[in-house]
Amino acid sequence: MLFALPFLFASCKKDSTSSVNFKYDKETVPTMSTDSVDMLISDSGIIRYRIVAKTWDIFEQAKDPHWLYPRGFYFEQFDSTFKVVVTVKADTAWNYTSQKLWRFKGNVYVTNRLGETFASEELFWNQQKEKIYSDKLVTIDRPDKGILQGRGGFELNQQMTEYEFKNVGEASTGKTIIYVKEDEGGEGENIE
Image 1 (cartoon, helix red, strand yellow):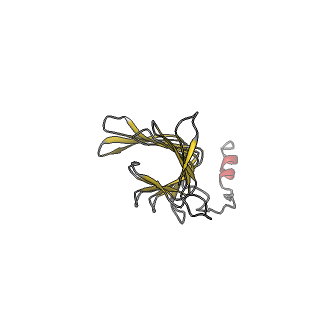
Image 2: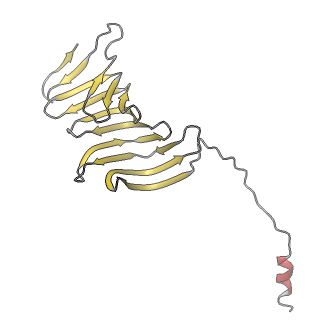
């Protein structure tokens, strides 16, 4: 009995609580954060997409709910034979889920089914309008056709088969200028 008496008094003490002064900011604190993501996504039971990222933060309670991939983003789309037909690579990516809008920033590279590579510092993909676009410099490397480069008003359809540059060139002349470089050793030419 004497042995149990000190424990009885210790258990009867008033509970002390500790609190941390923390204010939850829905815009800066993710509702979920995951690292080392390698995710396969299926459509009708067939694997169609793969996403690889170092970090995936979900802000589902933010004013504009979004997913953030702050430390690199890589995406692959597969055909029915599991062959990679489209790739997207960027330093940072955002998926604004309610708007169905993707934003890719920093060393963005997109390769389509034809092997053409689209490079820019920033690209947007609007899934509702089925358009990919940018106001930054875009370089298109077309195998066996040369390189196209333009700044401003670039648009690409979602299938990545048709693209155009709008509002390109010098504002003072109003002319559209697209730079075409046929090969590494050749001279580039301007098309006006």
